[in-house]
Length: 192
Image 1 (spheres, rainbow, N blue to C red):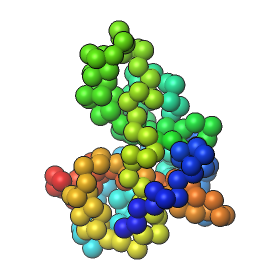
Image 2: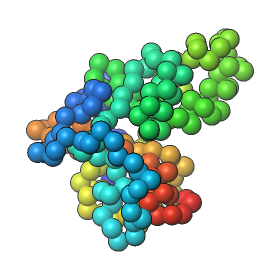
Image 3: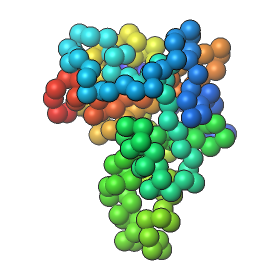
């Protein structure tokens, strides 16, 4: 599994990406269905293709948020979409991600306790997000050549809850998808 941090755009701190509220279908894939319940997915086995664990934005909607949005609004966006992670974008460049755990967990609580914030409404996504440089990044080609057991092993060896998956299209690198520890656990029926 390749980690491709060296391909980060130093000018922006992220990858130039065709990302908006949704990413258009790539490589001739049909548009994403509007509702897909992960709870009805079949269990996977270690020899299944690793791509089955990826939320692939060529097939599913990519949900984004700006760094200026309030954490409570971002959490509502996640709840409405039935997801637990949003890509954080600045001028259509992915600069990081924010999870429901970031918003509901220790990060937001510590900001209220130890900073000048007096209410949750003052806290913005930028305050609790994981910036690009701290998010594991996997190469789509490496993932496509892997099996579920290899991503399971990767998850067991890291504390990361999510990883971004990048690919190339027409010579431009873009965020192709996201890998979630929770999705791995649900798909395999185990705790990592």
